[in-house]
Amino acid sequence: MDQSQKKQGSVPKYELLYHPEIPGRAEYIRLIFEATGTPYSDISNHERTGYTKVQKIITETNPPAFAPPALLIHDPDYDGESIVISQTPNILLYLGLKLGLVPEGDEMAMYHANGLTMTALDMCNEAHDVHHPIDVEQYYEEQRSEAIKKSDVFRKRRIPKFFAYFETVLKKNTEGCGKYLVGKRLTYADTTLWQVLEGIDFAFPNTVRKISKNYHLLFSNFRDNIKDQKGIKEYISSNRRRPFSMGIFRHYPELDT
Ligand SMILES: N[C@@H](CCC(=O)N[C@@H](CS)C(=O)NCC(=O)O)C(=O)O
Image 1 (cartoon, rainbow, N blue to C red):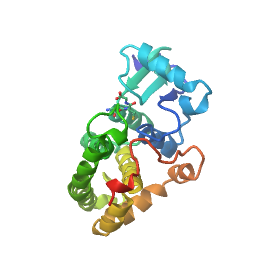
Image 2: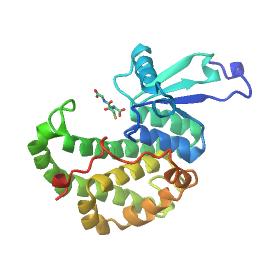
Image 3: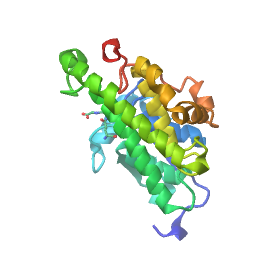
């Protein structure tokens, strides 16, 4: 749409479409809203019949979303139409640009931030696959022995590889002083990686306790810095922040021996 057609003074409205209760993949999106002080509605958690509404919207929209999270956007720029977009990294990129959580005035740095976000989400997906290595639609208990085998590889090889990678990224971004992944201010790559670290720590506390000393920037500078960011700090201590439970990140002691 032509910029001249913009309706002055009206602001976009955002509705988050996700499962109720668990933080899940929607948490990466909530962190953008919270860090930027942007109002949003979390339909499943805010409305009594919210989840029914979420399912209806994501299946009836065109194109339908395969799975939550999705974002319902009412933006005056879109001529009164409501738009639904899906896929976590896609939503993060959209909001990152709209709400100013991408590096300023540097297109390539934006792609770097997005690439780092996707790598953090890869680690999240692998953590999920540890407890569901065979079938996402079956109970953990039905794939427990395979999960135990997978957890061994994840803890011994994949976690250290991801941690070492992000430690190197922090070291190389001298502008960020070990506090930010790209440039010298907060991007959605930082909020996303921070949430993945929280999740890994929840699911694999023994592993993290044992090896975190090897990743000094990641576990002191970076992690502490992000949790103290304006918006994030208040959010963490609010009841809007959902605790980890039986979502993507799960703690089974036998997977963290
Ligand atoms: N790649 C998608 C994955 C979406 C996804 O797996 N969503 C989960 C909840 S976090 C779900 O409801 N999945 C149902 C399914 O895959 O059938 C994303 O990043 O958004």
